[in-house]
Amino acid sequence: MVRRPVAVVTAIVLFVEAVGIVIVNGVLATVAGNQSMSLAGMDPDAMVAGTWVMGAVSGVLLVLCGLIPLLAGIRDRAPGRFGRIALIACAVVHGVLGALAVGLVGWSAFAFLMVVLALIVLTLVAFDRRGPEAGSGVPEVPAPA
View (tube, helix red, strand yellow):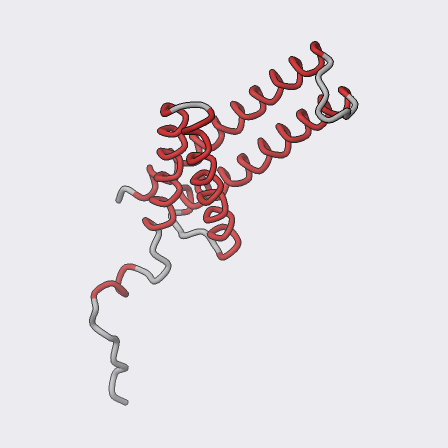
């Protein structure tokens, strides 16, 4: 089956994306600190701290979302209810960020986000919650007593 490798690849991509998000936010925090940037009179130190916190929180959430398909791939079982909800939320965020990335960053960022979105959706769809015999279309009839 292809579902285990897809789940593991999805987890690896989410882990790499988590590292990338933390690095990008670290660069933004460094630039904001070096330039003493502020927004609407906000303290520049608050801008730097907020950028670091945003990067750390985003990185942790991506790592947690990456653990779900990794565990699903290792166990060869569908994620539970919480795991499916977390992956659906992660997919929605990637879709919205992809739509924003086209105008702000460019088509390469959009393509990357859509690949991650496709991997997440494929992971969700590949693990069928019903089981292998449920897809046959023949209802199970109990044996006569």
